[in-house]
Length: 396
Image (cartoon, rainbow, N blue to C red; front, side, top):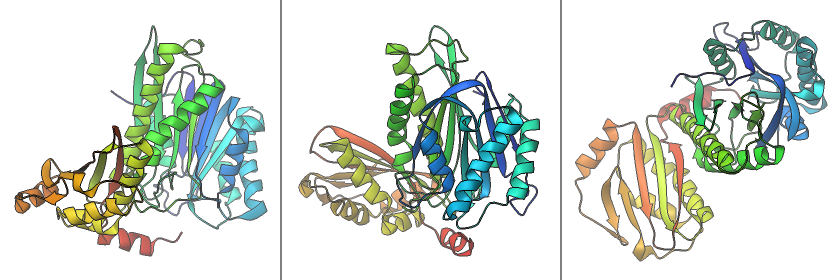
């Protein structure tokens, strides 16, 4: 399925001059031709960027018409001037698009602690407004304009077949400083379905819990993380309820999961995308906590980088997750190979298991418990020397 904007949306991405290189877009603008319901989920870090404060104050809402995003400077830890600059970005969009300030949301990502160069941002907003379009190229440009250390843009489109078609399209950015409860990642999900504010907010939170809150690259929770959902009702305006709302919610989760996985898949210096499945826990929260602990273990991550099916590191990480379980009833598989069963290592072909890891970018770790029926999936990356080099050299 080709990527597309839902009905009633236009987008643009331009180079405004915030980034050093003119071949990297650094400002994106998304508008809805009609007021949209908007919901947001944000970082749980106590230290947040000014755009997070602005979006928290303005969502949920039923009158949002634009989201402006800059990359290169995060507008975080910038005090009163940073707060004013976020308001100024929204006001500039409102001015050039003929909206009201309160109808505009703002996102920023990049270097922390630097003030936005508003003398570049404002002309960039003007340029983006002139380039707004509803075609696929404009969508891709908007996805590119929010990138920082990402190696590729991240877009996902899905159709929901009701008695009419509605569309859900999301864009995201993120490659490092990624930890649960969101990290340095931004995402805007747009739909032409009509949803109530309450359903939009609760549905987005549930989707984020299943997706963006189940990824980790380095466990570092950032200051800028934001996921926004816009629903403008352009498909026909009938507010979704019952089975139609359930279908939409399932698709929203699917889009968020796709985008969430694409972030660790693009992790800085990563050579493996690691999927950790935990089954047989008492609650999903316990399963997530075990999976997250395994995902954040440097020893597990370096073992995967070295294509080492090191069951001991995985099982021991599960053991210090703070969740009680019977160690004699734990089993482990890596890429489908049983390494550990009922609390005991089993004989396996270590060379073949290692070769499987080396031959595939995707590594699948499955932990089986016998405590209950709950399960969870979590995505992370391996930890390579290249990751250390990139983040030692990158100024945050």
